[in-house]
Every structure is written in structure tokens, then in C-alpha cells.
Image (cartoon, rainbow, N blue to C red; front, side, top):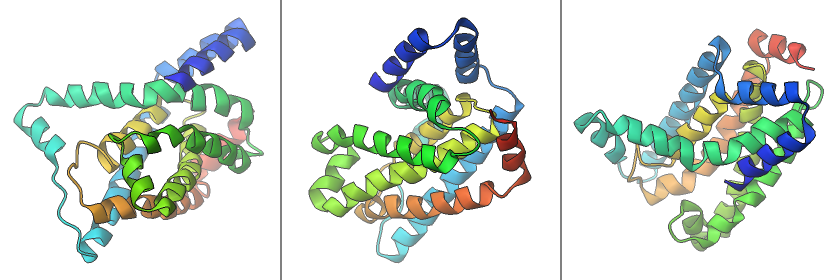
Length: 233
């Protein structure tokens, strides 16, 4: 909750009235570009999940459990439960700050990569307390192999490149980033596919790093991205 709370405070203190209105519009009001960005985000997460599980199976990993998906199939109303907690647990508590305020401050059309790396490093360091909380997957990484913990922080940097590309193609909208963050939390390493094997847990960060970079290289060469970047201030 702290990143969004601090982001909201900084917006209230530093922004002019019209900029505050723009902030909430970017965060809460979707448009056609936002919907497109959400579908692109979902496709990326599905690809990352598929590739991670494929490599996991090749190395002795077990099948994904899909317990969350089974719950939704048994009771479609559970979809709204996952949607609510998926948005509240990470996206709403962080992204008003990271992408709503901080991206607006440090990212422009001339420094997307540099700004993304800065935000990614801050984002990764901010997650460090999770390595000491037994209920979190980060705790398992830190206590099984410290390289996995370092890999997670590096993944936050490559994730930030992806988030920034979505930020650009949606014309600075934060709304689709809420969903990208949610898809990562509840699909790639969350309840929808749970339980997943230890092999999957080990592979998910390295695979995500590689695919994040591939995605960023590809998306930044598209006309959609280039035109959107040119339209930025």
C-alpha cells in the first residue's frame, strides 16, 4: 500500500489541479488503447507461463495444478473474487505510485530504458522484506538459493521495461498496468495455476527475464510503440 499512498501524497502536493485530474483519468478511465494493452499483457503472461512450464516439464517438473481455474469453473462467481483480490493485493497498492506518479516523473520519450531501470531497481529493493516472510514465494527463493533472490530483483528491472512499454503504447495510462501486474501475481506465480513444482519456481524468474527482454525489443520496434512514443512529452 505504501507506494500508492506515497504516490497519492506527492500528486496532491506537487501537481496542479489539472494534472491531478489527468492522474486519476490515466489510472481509472480506460480507452481503446488500454484494452489493447491489457490483451497484449495477458498474451505475454500466458507465453511466459507456457514457456516456464514447458522447460519445467523437460527438467522433471510436475504438471500445474490449476486449482484457481478449477474453482472458477466450479463457481463462476469466484472469477470476481480473484479479480478483486488480484487487483487489491498488488496493483492498487503499488501502481498508483510506481507507474502513476514515478513513471510520470522520470520517463519521457528520450529515456524510457534509463527511467525503467531506475524504477525497476527501486521496485525490486522495495520487495526485499518479502524475502523474510514465510508465506511468500520470495522467502522460498531466498532460503533455497540466494541467486534466485538476486534474480528476482533483476526480474523487477526487466519487468519494469515491459511495464514502461505498456505505459507508452497506452499513452501513459496506468489502467492496463493494473491488469498486467495482476496477471503476473495470480497467473504466472499465483492461485490460478497453483500448485506448481519446485522446478517451475526455480525457472520462472530466469525465463521471465529473457522473455521480458525479447518482448521489449520486439514491441519497441513496432509502429504502435514508435507512434505512441513520439506522442509523449
